[in-house]
Structures are given as C-alpha cells and as structure tokens.
Image (cartoon, rainbow, N blue to C red; front, side, top):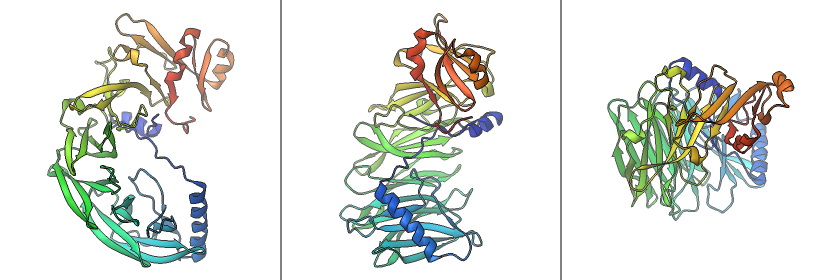
Amino acid sequence: MKSVLLLLVLLLTVLLGGCGLNLQPPSSLMKSPKVEKNEQALKEQIKKDSLYRTRPFLLTPKHSEEKRSIYIEDFDGDGEKNEAVFFYKNEKKPFEIKMVFYQKKEQWEKVATKTIQNYGEITDLSPIQVKGQKAMLLAAGFGYDGISEKKMHIYRFSDSKIDDIFQTPYTRTIAADFDEDGSSEIITLSLQKGKEFTARLFKADDGVFVEKSSLKLDSSINGIEQMKAGYYTKGKKGVFIDVGVGAHSASTYVLGYEEGKLVMKLDAKNEDAIKSMIVYSEDVNENGIIEIGKTVVPKGWEKEPFASLPWFVYYYELKEDGSLKKVAEHYPNYEQGYELTFPKEWFGLITIARSTNEHKLTIERVKDGKNLFTLYRFTNKEWESQSKSYIEIENTLKHVYAMKAEEERKYGSLFHLLSENIRD
C-alpha cells in the first residue's frame, strides 16, 4: 500500500501547529542483475579513472521518482543500454556541477564531460524518448537549495559529445508519455507566489521541443508539495499537483492530457479538492489509477484543538464528470507508526472512541456506539505477561500490536505498519 514520511517529520508538524501531513510512497528501486552488474563495473572504473583530486559528491535528483545517481540507458540508440551519465560536484566548488558521459565498449570508458555553472543541486532527472528516434535524451533540472525557480536542460549524447538542445525555466517538472505514442511529453510548473502559477506542456516537433499548451493556475498557494504523473481515470493520463494553501491546509490540481493539450480536470479551488493538511495523491488501492487524499475529522471530535485531533484519510477517484468517488478510508497513527485500512462496509459510519489509554484504540459505529475493533499496543516486556490473553497482529523491536477477541481476528488484516523500516 502506501508509506508515509517518517515519524519525526509528522511529530514536528504537530508540534509546530500543523504544516502538512506528507504522504509519499517510495519509488521502486528494483533493478535487473545485468544493470546491477553494469553499474558495479562502472563504479569500479570511475574509481580507477581518479576523475577528482578531492572527494566528489555524486548527485541524486531531489524530486525525481527514481532516486538514482547513475543513469544507464541506451543513449545512442543502438539497442543496448551501454551508455551512462552521472553528475557530481566538488566540495570546493559548491555551485559547479560536472556531468560525465561513459560508454561501454570492452570496458567502461569516459567519452565526454560537461561543466554546468551556477547551480548547487540537481532537482529532476528523467531519460526521455522522442518518437522516431531510437536514442534516449536526458531531461535534467538544476537549481539552488531554497530557490523556487530552476532551469531545465535537455541533453543529447552523440559522437562522444554532450549537446544541450533545449532550456526552459521552471519550478517543478515531470516527463511521461501521456498519450502513449512512444514519445515523452514534458510538463513544467512555474510558480511566482502571488504573481503567476502556470503549467506548460512541451513536446518534440521534428526533434525540437516546443510549447504546445499552457494553463494558468492560482498563484496564491504556499508551494508545490508533489507533482505526480499517472492515470486519473481508466485509459486517461494526467498529472496530479498537490499544493499547500494555508498555514497547514492544502489542495490538489488534476491536469489531464487530451488531444495534445492540457485540460483542467480538477481545480484546486474546488471545495472537494481542499483538505486540512497535505496528503499526497497516490494509487492506494493498486488499481492503476491515482487517488486524491483528503483528511477528515472523525465524528464526535470536531470541537477538539487542531493539534490534538485524530484524522481519518479518505481517498477519492476522479470520475469523468469531475465528481469524486470515495474508494478508501484509512486511519493513520503517525505517532505510533501504524495505519488501519477500513472495509467498505464501514465507510462513513465509524469513529474513534474516546479513551485516556494511549495504548488502546477502539473503532466504534457512530449510530449506536458499538465497538467494531479494538487495537492494543504493548511493550515487549508487557507482552510477556499478556500474550496468552491477546492475539498478536504485528511486532516491532519494542512493541507488539494485538487484538483481544477471537471474533475480531478477521479485522487483523486492517493493520499495517506505516513503513517496514519503522522499528521504533
């Protein structure tokens, strides 16, 4: 399912009065054995080449879904993934980035380098395909830490050289084949708070990238939290833009791609899109369609102070008519590092029972107060004396999560640790 930014971020969020709840699934890091072998051989060759006099820093893109520092692709179009590109900077030159292009013949050989001046970090990296061309291009975004405006470059690698074939300013960007014609489109967001917020679509035309479409968005937002490409409904792709709005409130844009143009499918100013805190859009039910998350106060808790509220998170699928259809209800407990995913028959009918016991949580039906499921949390020491009276659901290094009644066993599958790496 989904994982969430780690506990520390959320605790700080609550203590500071609520900047957003950032829910962000990790990118897949799986690689084929051949790619891993190639990458290891390349790293060994880089070390042998001694490119640097002082300690280098390989750079990983800040916003790209695939967190890689070395990109091995078919950049020359010969059908083999035997070209590699990576970026590094030297600690003595913090605003100079080096791009290095390697090619594998008998072994990996350095064939070209390029110096990118006046940038401190790589914000985005994505290999892209152009229809009719076998060779891959590379879209690379550069910027400064804390500065919103960045510069995107598109590079072509050929004849042992690196050509910079396109540049455009941007704040956030994403590349994907939105119309599935074999060619990547690039969507950029340019934000100047209170002045301009524009989405632009770029596509290759006879090998030259040109702006094909644009949309004006609301520039009064606080910032762009996430930009994610994917299906917003069956057979139709677009981009989800989760934005901060107020001190802790947020909203979501969905921009579709239709007939070569950007179209507004969900406006962040729409009441249905606004939420109390940032929740990242993601495919929570694994049906291939990205859902929009929205925080909801459980019934009976509406008058509690904001910082002490428990929160349900509802996930909605965008329908063709622009309305939202609820497909999932979750209860994430960030402080204790777990989440409950509710069955469909509970949707809209449940709340959290009030309790002074922080190690016990009960889900009850609103209309009659009937307890539907109670979750218990014990330290390992406590569990030694309680294990015969409860049914274990999950454990971490310090705690055991359990239920008491045998008839609740079917609800044990509702429980998930927020991350397999969270072990207290």
